[in-house]
Image (cartoon, one colour):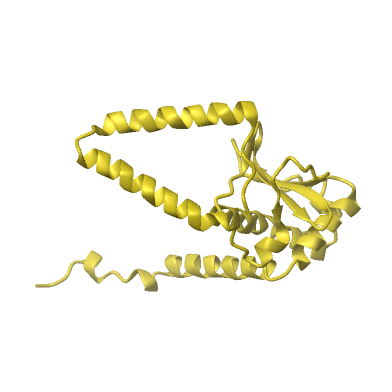
Length: 207
């Protein structure tokens, strides 16, 4: 029986697929290069301080257009910088802070703190970064830990407890507890935790 066109289709030889895969590979290689050392992050943060202003991508008429071509090209990697930070944070169960205009992470490098995030909403995402004073009561991700791919000691414990929670929920469902009842109970518990955090603040993350 003759195969139809769909069965004969080889996606790996599709030019669009090939170009997309090559762009993705190029971005991943560039991102790995940015986190192979502290060089890029140190250059980027020093450049911000030197310019005497907070950095926001997309505001080219105000910021990037004032820079020389080589420096401008370096700033084009800022979205990859955020992606790498975000990926590392999620692997260690660290999550960004929400604000009115988007989300951000608190980072530290040497003796300085930095706010790094992006805006959400209409139009393309806008990456931003600015320097701030370190505060003892707040959690910061050390950029050196990202470069070294340091795994927080709490990760294994969290994985075990989440697996235990998943097994417990599944066993309750198998025992006859309705899905709706499980969902309502878990939602209530999470809402209570969220209200507690809003009033008392989040617990400090264990390294």
